[in-house]
Amino acid sequence: MGADHEDRPSRELPPGLAEQLDLPYSGMVSFGHRPFLTETDQLDAWRPDVAIVGAPFDIATTNRPGARFGPRAIRATAYEPGTYHLDLGLEIFDWLEVVDFGDAYCPHGQTEVSHANIRERVHTVASRGIVPVVLGGDHSITWPSATAVADVHGYGNVGIVHFDAHADTADNIEGNLASHGTPMRRLIESGAVPGTHFVQVGLRGYWPPQDTFEWMLEQGMTWHTMQEIWDRGFKEVMADAVSEALEKAEKLYVSVDIDVLDPAHAPGTGTPEPGGITSADLLRMVRQLCYRHDVAGVDVVEVAPAYDHAELTVNAAHRVVFEALAGMAARRRDAAQEKPGPPAR
Image 1: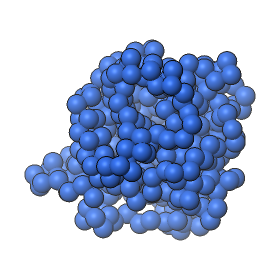
Image 2: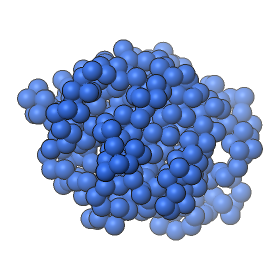
Image 3: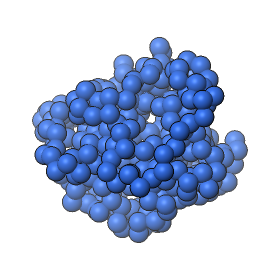
Image 4: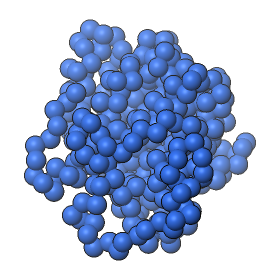
């Protein structure tokens, strides 16, 4: 652990549990083989820096359902990546204590109950000074998740960098205010995250229509389309987006819809949109954001394993989480050692 963890008591896993977590293809399911906690008092005793929370909810999906199976797939079927980060030169879990805090209870067909439970579980984590990393689920889960983070840190004090093919700023989708195409509008209208505090990356395709973009302009939102990335290059756009996020708010919430990736990199999603970014670009940008900023929450959504091929999407989503953790760990290490930060890659 890092220096600020030295006051924590030594906590050895029981031999039986350690064996269960030892192999990637057997034993109990836990993200990154991290300790699996279920109760609040366990969270208080462990005092982690980050807690993984599943949000297995997908009835707000408009196209292909199945993202409720995403949290389990990300935990269970991703290739074991190891814990040493080559680019940053650090053991992630030497500097960041991470646990798996299980799933919010999301009974199928009950949107209000599921969203309330997601908000409550994320708040349980964030209110203890722990960073929630939420595994979706469809993108509607960002509404309760980011609201819970804003409940803790203050409305207007949280900015969002949102990776997506779609802006998710519709007023409603076929009458549904809680659709996976509406969460960013709900956050803005509620005051939890003002429009001026948004930076969106990767927008493309045929939605939203012009009137929705006009509403977004009125809210002061910032976005970078795939056409801009094509014209200017990813590194330049990444530098702008990172800088813009620094100016938005004290705390940062990163929301990654896996369909921001081209379907060649992530076919297992509900609304695949050709022409997206590569996994290499996404991973580096998430890492840099989590290194440069005081991150208060992360989510990775819309992984629908039934449509995946060779676990491409599952592995991409899994690695997005690990890059976020690596960025946070490097930020902690370099603050402790007063080293200069890593270059943008």
